[in-house]
Length: 261
Image 1 (cartoon, helix red, strand yellow):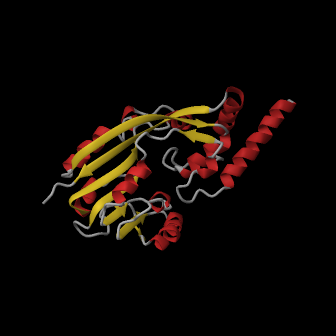
Image 2: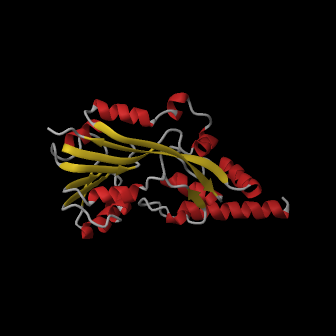
Image 3: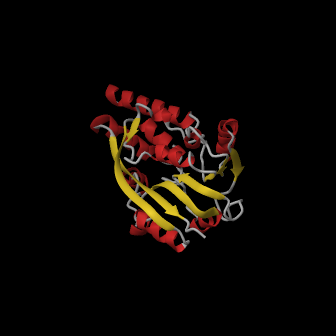
């Protein structure tokens, strides 16, 4: 093995080992600072959500993760509740949100939501894995609003398909914004806003790829470094010789209102 090849292999092992060891609890991606970039949607979800929170009386944040986005709201409603399913995130969100007056409820992210009918005038969710529209409509009070930023179709599929191969049309086309519109309307909600954008994402080293796939577990289900080590090594070589891996993130913003009684 040449000296250059040995140096590349050593860098690969160091980057992968570091990324495989770091905690992926919560929904904070600051570990990727300087190692990956993702263009942000133009609508500014956190700011827009905070504005709606400031006018709400009772709010629910579904699948809050570690509570980081909800904790950024300057003024929470008098009644604020968050749900989360993953135990490490439940603990993290509880520690972060309880001092702010928000309750965290452990919930498996399956129907039914553990709340009564017409309980909230605002329900929000950032990047939910699944949106249970009928349940959202049930817990919204008449005149209440659901406000959500969601992952769109074929998001970061340059990376997904590098590891999994070409995906069938039904997989690439899932999470289409128009499907969300139809499901919201079928649940009895009026969609008042729907916007979608495609955004540039770059991974500057293989450690960033490993960290991302460990954290966003639905991208490559069952991902482990050992199972994908040969493909990771090939991708490391491509990044080292040709520059960052460029992918495209898709996001959509949906706002739906429950009709007044």
